[in-house]
Image 1 (tube, rainbow, N blue to C red):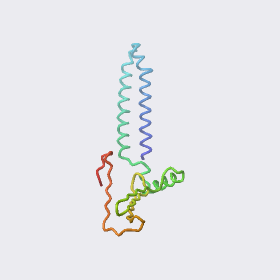
Image 2 (cartoon, rainbow, N blue to C red):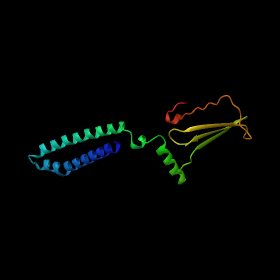
Image 3 (cartoon, rainbow, N blue to C red):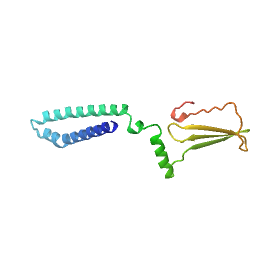
Length: 152
């Protein structure tokens, strides 16, 4: 559905460009020459342009509410395939790691797949020689103030 609506929108835009070219190359010169039929033809051309613009706006609104084909695939199918392809070519790691060292512990946060979208988060808390610590509670607060995202 998305692809068809996109093709319709592109066809309407092409039609609008064609209509503008017709007006510029044929109808406007005829109007300047004083052709008695030119004002009527130019008026109908403008009505046609308005119709094309309305069609473009409708197609654009439809695209905004129609999910692209990629979104219709089962969860993770495309993302996993993309991540695998990127990893094979050395473009993208399969996970992102962040280490934090404090006075009496070390924490390593791992995000998988480590890119935009849904990620799994694993937090390992250890002492300075790498032995796991038994902690009662771990809190992870995520934010991006530059993008207007408050702490989560």
